[in-house]
Image 1: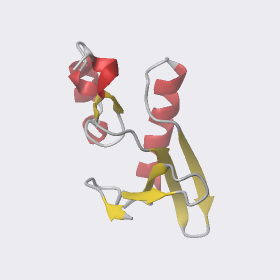
Image 2: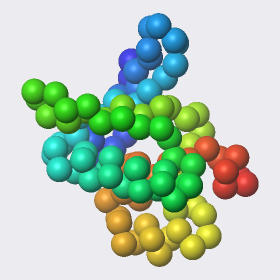
Image 3: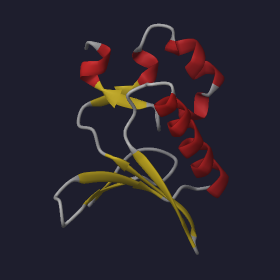
Image 4: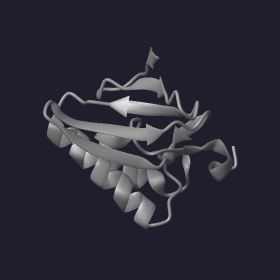
Length: 105
């Protein structure tokens, strides 16, 4: 549908059956994409409201598909998250997104 910013080559796609929007990423590195997915799963397990995500292994490498959340903001806008974002700088603006209602902004 349209290209999005980021190092993983993200594009916004629409499911024709449901009309829902998703972010599809193939990545510039299979390991990078798998690490993003692992981080998503860890945050979900901790109860952080990040988009629902699935990782598909294809013959051409992994593909990550995440639900699109309009007006999402980086997780680092939360108090205390900045230190965490410094520990994981490659994820600061790519995968740790949450709806703006969760941050109170």
